[in-house]
Structures are given as C-alpha cells and as structure tokens.
Length: 62
Image 1 (tube, rainbow, N blue to C red):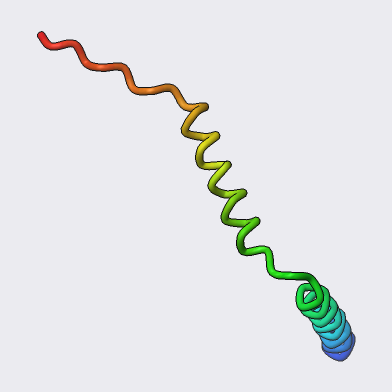
Image 2: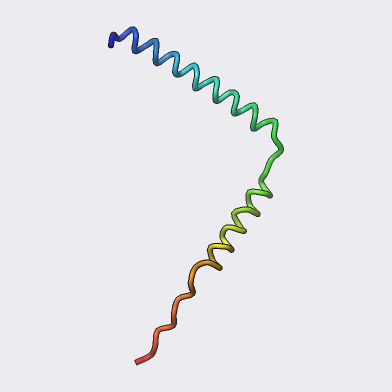
C-alpha cells in the first residue's frame, strides 16, 4: 500500500473516531447522572455473589 493511501485511511479513521467520541459525549451529557443506580446495582451484584458462593467448611481439629 502506498504511504499516501495509508495516511488518507488513517486520517479518515481518526475523523470517524472523533465524530463517534463527540456523539457519545453529547449523549452522555444529555442523560441524567446514574451514580445512585450504579452503586445500588453493584451492591446487589456483590450481595448476590456472596449468597451464591458456598461458605467454607470448618476444618476438623485432629
């Protein structure tokens, strides 16, 4: 591939990535913050994992 062609493809890809980043930035700025929902969700995941894992069996004294 010619270097000029590679450079054009690089610039095109970089422009597409910048456009996607701008779109994402604008979309996340328009939505309300979800800090409480995120913390509550991860807390529920942690509780569920604790309930799902088996408790360690006690070691018998010899």
